[in-house]
Length: 376
Ligand code: NAD
Ligand code: DAU
Image (tube, rainbow, N blue to C red):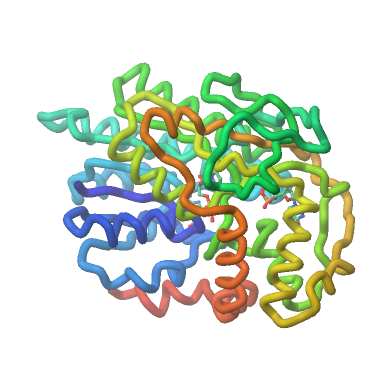
């Protein structure tokens, strides 16, 4: 197969590209990325010279460019991750989110439709796989702030933290109720993907995943931002009371799910992806502080005084919790890591890759493309 992975220079995309390039030497993997502030080719240093990998700097909104690339490379599959992904930025600049997440997705859909329709085999062996988020479902109520044991067990949690904060979970049949400009734009793109299946028969799949954590995440997001701030003893801005709940999944487990669903998922289906691993922000922040302190040889908990409660995020969703039992039941996927292992690995990675972090925070990473690719 010849596969375009969009947003492959970003956080999750780089893990998906790495997995596909290493696991499928017989495929050609084309990483299509505009390299916005969130795209960093240093995330893919280890695979950039592999013969089955190609990087193309392109905006997904460039319909002509995408259409030509599909023809030139005889593309059979698209795994679409490119997006503006940060909620706080969407509150400041909603236009960019509508442009990239909605119009960009539409441009990819239309290019795929026109190209595949023109082939003798049409949709046969083709896949348009759209990566979406649990935020499109809106927010769940926190009916049990003290926590309850959910009625399922996975390897993702040790039991001690295996709490849910309400009886309701995001299931695939829920009505979309996005609240932020980011999630509204993602919801809109999901609707376009479904519309292209229902109207034209495009072979689409959509997945909605919970919060990812792990290496190579841009340090505007909670976990890498806080790890870096703790290291440098800078304040940790906790929104509101820190009581909001997120459901955390190790990024490589998301990449494995994407691989499985791309190959085995049913066309026109939606699958939710998550690890039944709910955490209040303040609790996860304490775990991160203790882990960073321990790994840096500081007395554990010393940096709790960095916690600084700040004004809440506008429209801050209270609780996300994914029910991924459909994916477990139908395709046999489950997270491979205990949360404790995942967070330990993640903190270790950021502490051992301070150069990566410094390049990102200084802006130097944006020169990587010029050094490595310009003129190639
Ligand atoms: P990210 O912000 O780290 O990376 C986004 C990538 O897309 C970057 O490489 C950027 O350069 C590229 N990009 C942005 N606009 C582009 C454009 N117009 N044309 C081409 N490339 C462009 O994002 P992420 O956290 O890796 O998220 C990837 C996808 O997964 C997104 O669609 C996001 O909505 C979804 N998602 C993320 C999470 C999470 O926790 N991070 C959870 C569920 C779903
Ligand atoms: O649920 C999936 C979503 O997870 C993805 O679709 C998004 O792309 C991804 O960014 C993430 O969204 P969140 O808004 O949940 O992630 P973020 O890391 O920005 O924030 C996590 C929680 O921590 C959230 O409740 C807000 C809070 N927070 C965040 C930051 C950056 C703080 O309290 N302080 C902070 O400085």
